Image 1 (cartoon, rainbow, N blue to C red):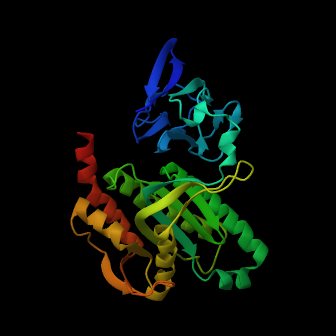
Image 2: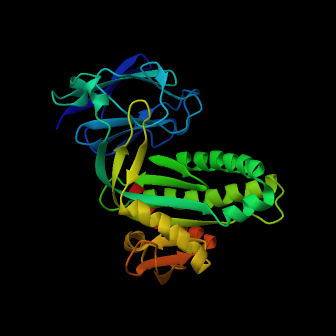
Image 3: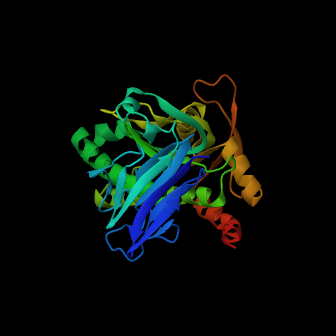
Length: 328
């Protein structure tokens, strides 16, 4: 195991934060922070995180903080690979990243790392896709410029929701938005599912606010697909145009599950693996109905579980005993 750590000074005392496992290390003013910055008013409640994603590759991610996360004097906007000697500034606190491993990215020529355009790892993830129903019809009724302004506002608000609930990545494709959560272990933790379900509740609230703000006679409706599985994650782009995303069947199926909400006339469709993991945590989830659905591109009917938005609050409640146990 390499010797990896963040060196920093806080309250006139030099300290170390070791990063020697696959956990996600939060750095902010919350109780979940690996560093106590609660007395720094320039640090957000959810500010930044560091995480090992593959081998000795460590990434730094800003969580949509108010004042930003600085890396070597520049703000980061996407998950960024760290190298030995990198200087991170969060609020008034400065960290220096150390990775004592001859084969680590930090030991190589800094320019050489950018020659690799496809750097990925395989992780267990859960994907959430939300998509507006009858987008074409809405555009014809309301006009393209009106819809573009409204979608822009919607995505800004929904993006804040996903960032607040610790998504690893977000993407916006047409009128659809996607959030990706990376699970720390091979079995999702109760807290991870709670964050995903709280995102659903909050996104529904965002749509309600948009409907009210723009005075829509016919409210915008949307469907959600949620699916768990293994996928390749990482930077699929280049230095000039980085694109941190997830690729694989788990992602593709989530979009198909969301599309099935229209055919089935439901709010949410869960993939079967998400259902299985959730059942292992809470017992048989109340309010989820098993369905065989025909998904575009899949030769056989797939097992899925459908429900409405009111059930999500109950799913969060059912997770609470597991969350309480994890804190004891």
